Length: 371
Image (cartoon, rainbow, N blue to C red; front, side, top):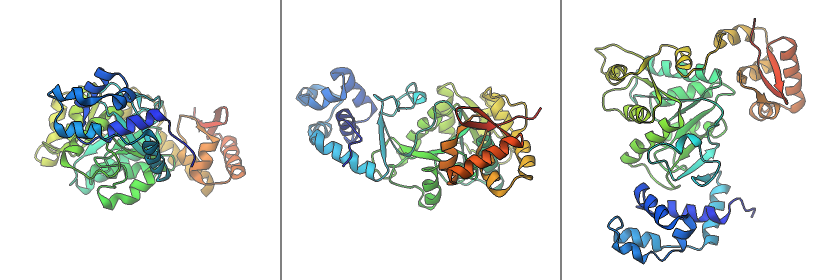
């Protein structure tokens, strides 16, 4: 079996799978011993005098499968398409390093969000109206058209509507932060989107595979949703809803809060309207969100692309739809469209000749703005 992990992964994996050893206890262990390997190798009897640790915690820490066995477990996860990243690695999202109680590890399928592109979290009520779901879907799609990644929680209502909007776009990138283990799709009826995201973004969780949903897990994961985002967009949020927890986390993290306003007599908008009193920004379209994040585009991308697509052939439309103002490498276009390399080269040359796209260097292609 090809080895994808090294011994330091084994120690981090061991620590993160110790039941009952959460953020505070891990922090104490790391401060006291220094590294995950030193924690693993330590004689932990001295922790019996530390009030923070209970008898069952010590039993968990004394359970030490050999590094070889731990690496075998990690390799088995790899074979199931599950990847593993922890705080001691460069792959760990930089945005999460600075939040309160950053997740020690991340399990994910697909890939982690790109650091060089903006991310917007879209959250709201689970029992959202049809109108609210359509608003969320349109925001998800329009932001993705402008190269913005979308993160949410795969939940019913606003969350999944926004993520479906993003998935409609061939080049759309959306990420779901789960309150369960990465191998558990919750709610189950979103299994199609859960699978799609693994090819057009990713699904991630701080909880080890096999972990079932607990109410507290879903509230806790909201700090990761806001932590990954540059701004949080709230649509149809009632008072006391989970989406307001995400917004509260975002405020504490110094992130921008965007709110789609609603009727003052509609309880579905009570939470969002309250956020507006606390400094949230009123938004009615994707451009408002982009302006709030300092992403200024002189041309209305959606209108321009809709107009240009009328004159394109079907295959050209597929490639054209996935491009934004950030350059995409030709290999990425091939991978995401499933078209053969010669066909993609033919299409990008045709789009270049029509003045719709440009080679921005090293075979990266982007939309060409009209004068």
